[in-house]
Amino acid sequence: MLKTPVGRLRVVGLLEGISYLLLLFIAMPLKYFFDLPMAVSVVGAAHGFLFVTFVLAAVYVKFAKRWSILWGIWAVIASLIPFGTFILDRQLQSKV
Image 1: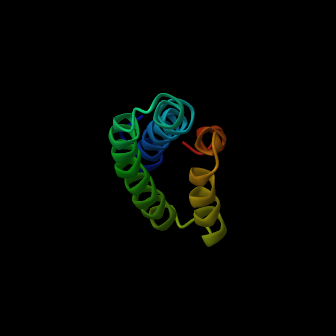
Image 2: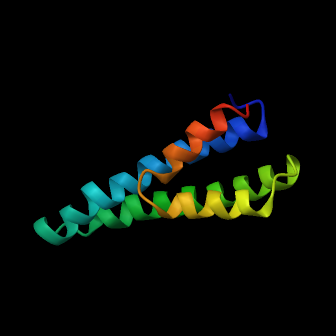
């Protein structure tokens, strides 16, 4: 799976999607309901790194595969929506 640009994008996308869900559904409630802001600091930093890595990987795949600019826009939008990277992964499975 890590041998192709699309495979690497899929792995980074899954990790980014998981980190986003952890941030939204675990770290944020810990911060606001249980007064534990450290959770957001740790998970937020990891998610930020994975988000930037995902966007860079998506841009690389867009140019390497010569896919349309609309695909690139969809990939970035998918990373902003909870569960969006999992939907994108399903679409990328057919392209590997």
